[in-house]
Image 1 (cartoon, rainbow, N blue to C red):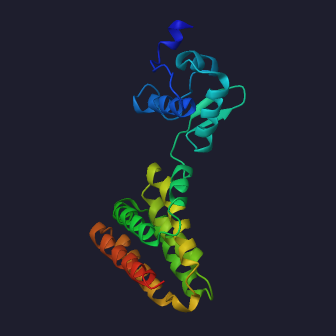
Image 2 (image 1 turned 90 degrees about the horizontal axis):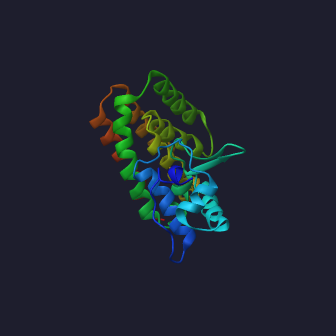
Image 3 (image 1 turned 90 degrees about the vertical axis):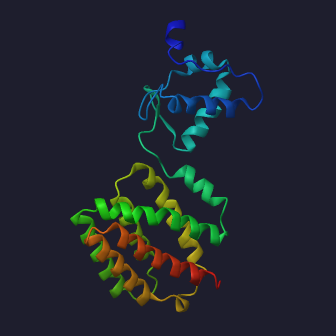
Length: 230
């Protein structure tokens, strides 16, 4: 058992807030490169010996990590680090900022401007077709079009094929939509949104990252100015 445990050198846990410290040590297995995404963690018994903590403390930490989407447990197989970033940690962080409209729109600006530029380099013909159909659907829709609007931005974000940003974009767009729900439909301008989307689409179709960045900034800045009045 000593030889097995020595493969993963970890600090002994002796101070208060044991569960939080266990979480830090398990995360450090990833940060230090001792284990990679998708790898299996040492058994509960091995972790208890390495960290010198009780089973309840260890399980509390593992449950917290599982709720955050960092690990997942398989019956009879053990506990594994997840293979890609999930949205739960970011969703929780955004929940703490609910109601802070300025911060939410600024975060969206910081994320989507980079994403649309990357999308201009990576976007596929299939994704361009989906964007085109999305614009046509919005043109035909009468009434609330927020879900269609969100899907347009989601297609762009996911076309970048980046596992980190994929975990960020959904909770960010969901939080933004909750903000827009407070704006009456009569105060929204679907025609302007459609025109902006068409301009972004054309920049992506032309594989022009700079134009895509500029068009997206124009679109989101318009939304920011509109939200300033509510």
